[in-house]
Length: 487
Image (cartoon, rainbow, N blue to C red; front, side):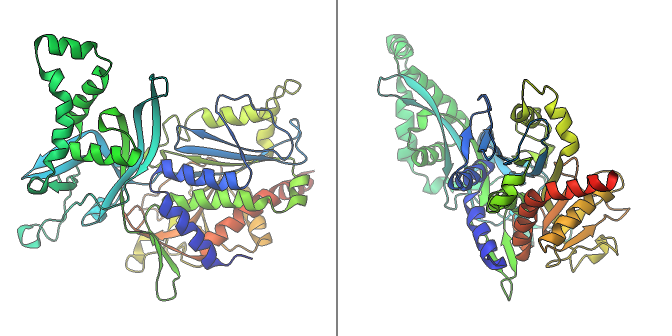
């Protein structure tokens, strides 16, 4: 049986590969492929049979996996769902990012989500994401491709102001437009050959008369115009570096969706290696443990044979900015997917009937009691490291935990020997929210939540995997026992 440290180390490997939501979805896809899940297009006609395993991606940053129970019948089925999210607070490179000041080449960035932005200062930052580019096929026709890229090496730095120049030392006031401008290079060390190489391709476009007319009618005119546009938006040096990583020419890049990240890898820390220290714990812990829990639940073949439900893990993007996107939890895509899974011409209201037989857990993060700020927590609800999964409760329905849903989770947690603890925010302190409309089971307790580097406890990884695996295996039995009590 896997122990807590091994589970945490496996998570660290996943975390260090998953530097953006694009890469997180790619890492999840690798796990699913290794477990013999079959990829579907969102346009495919979904036809399912008992024990089928499928996954679907949306916009390359959200992914949905589902397994059909062995006793599945459309008229009797429900959904056993765990939801998580793939995004984390970060800095994203602006569409027009070319900036310079005092002979430094800089990059314009936009804050994404509610980050602790001061924690991004004095870090060795790199960039990763998705690049869309033009490429010629063997017939000479242009095709548009997209590729994930991770530059890996430290390229950017946001330096703090020297202490003797800071007249407001005790009061740090951050202007996110002015102060969050990473430096990338200094003009004194700039490689002029790179700029010359790109600029040389613009010569025809800049010439007048016949040369310009011929250039406009030439098949290469589009790349030249695109190159001019890109040079006005991004530093040539950055374009060349990204193009080299993609394996294309800089002038063939059509657009980029790039995120900054800290190059320091996540590690185990603490005297006894009892902590996980790294970026993006919120919420790649939820994504990883939900997917791993689903895969491990399949080891119990007898439970799968008897399961009437469809087991689902949904990993959404854009939770950190309100979920209001095509790949976010507020879109119609997830509901549409569930309807298509249960579509049966002989049972036209199968989906509507399934809702009463369904149950959802939201796998997100909770913040541990901070030893230096313990007064920020309600005195009788202080979640702590090494005490288990946190269930969040809020009287104003920021989290929809009720006595019944909490009881179902407690029964399952007891069965798989996973401890639970509760959190309620102080009345005078605002709390967050998350993607799950039915139940928020918060896990992977953190300090420095939304920092560029967070800290969590090692046992929470294995606890979460066991809880979600147990949820998929045990839920039909627990719900059946509750119905017996009602009758």
